[in-house]
Length: 70
Image (cartoon, rainbow, N blue to C red; front, side, top):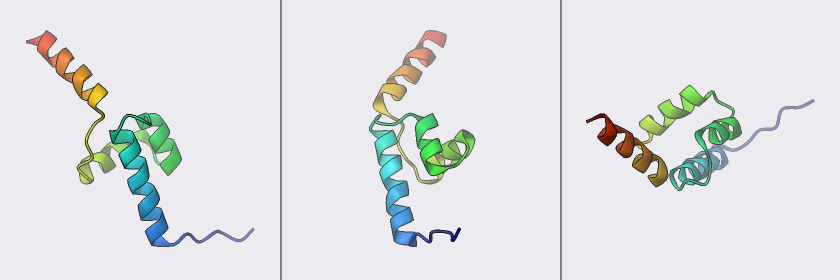
């Protein structure tokens, strides 16, 4: 079977759409990494590389946990 060639600009658009959906809380990290075909650890690395914001819900959860530790 012949491999499907996807233009770079379409791959980039797909990547940015997935990152935006994650930042908006529409996708979990697990689902987003699955859709991109990469391990979850690589997805977290990608978030850092692209300065993608964490979902607000997750930010609130992390903040609450840190405050409980203090």
